[in-house]
Amino acid sequence: LSVEDFDLFSRTVEAESDRSDNFEGRVLIAVVILNRVNDSSFPNTPRGVITESGQFEVYYTGTIWSTSRTTLSDLAIIEAYNRLESGEAPHVMYFNNTGYQYGEPYCYEGGNYFVTT
Image 1 (cartoon, rainbow, N blue to C red):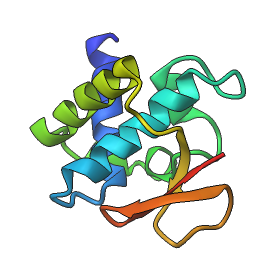
Image 2: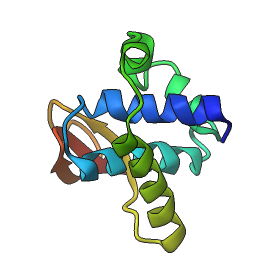
Image 3: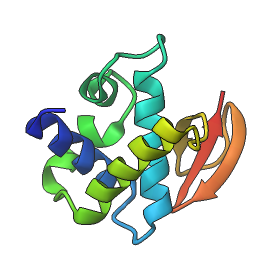
Image 4: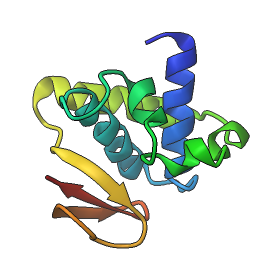
């Protein structure tokens, strides 16, 4: 990833986590983005996934630009990559903060409900 793309990725993870102290929630947000990158139904880059219409509200509302990148979100992205490489990452594809609305429920973590397909 370029520095600019990593910055966008980290800001997105931070904004979507609502800036909680929950590291695992951040990791799962990053895993969702990376799982989408690896799925032919989505763009094949983190930037493409994040900026895809209707997917990440924090991008379209501009919240990510008022959210600073943090070490915790940076480390969450690295951990997500490591889990994917080792085969330990769940196949979570979606999350939201209002409840399980679609997909197979996986877990509630860091204020978000994560689902698999």
